[in-house]
Each structure stands twice: as structure tokens, then as C-alpha cells.
Image (cartoon, rainbow, N blue to C red; front, side, top):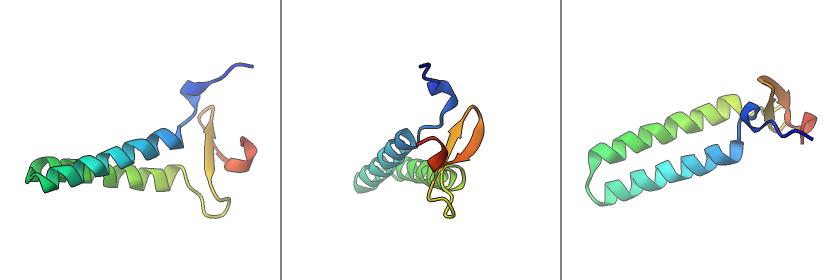
Amino acid sequence: MLLLVLQIIPADLNAFLYQMETNIARAAGQLGDEATRTRFEQAANTRRNSINQVLWDNASGGVGWFRGERQASHAWA
């Protein structure tokens, strides 16, 4: 079986990156580095909105991407 990892959008990786961005923003804020806090808050907000738009569908409970096509999560899980 061929694993086509370059053709799948990894929701888990994006979730980890979102958490990292929010952690950096919070730490920067506590250290008084407002420029870094703002930059990482904006990055986290952009990623969260993208995850919600691209990787989630309330009707099916999730979305998967395979070979560049959006599919209901049950189609590939």
C-alpha cells in the first residue's frame, strides 16, 4: 500500500502548530514583547480560521483531503 502523505492535509500537525503559536504569543506577552505576541496571535488566528474552513464540516463531523479533493471524514477514516 502506497502512503500518499504529500496529498493529505494533516489536521493533527496543524493543531500542534496552532498550539505552538498560541503558546509563543502568551509567553511573549508575559515577557512584554508585544511585537512577537501580536505576530504569533495573528498567525494562530489565521491557522484556526483555516482549520475551521478547510478541515471541518459540521454536517459530517469532519473533513478529509485526499488527492486534492475534499471528502467527508468517514470516506477515508
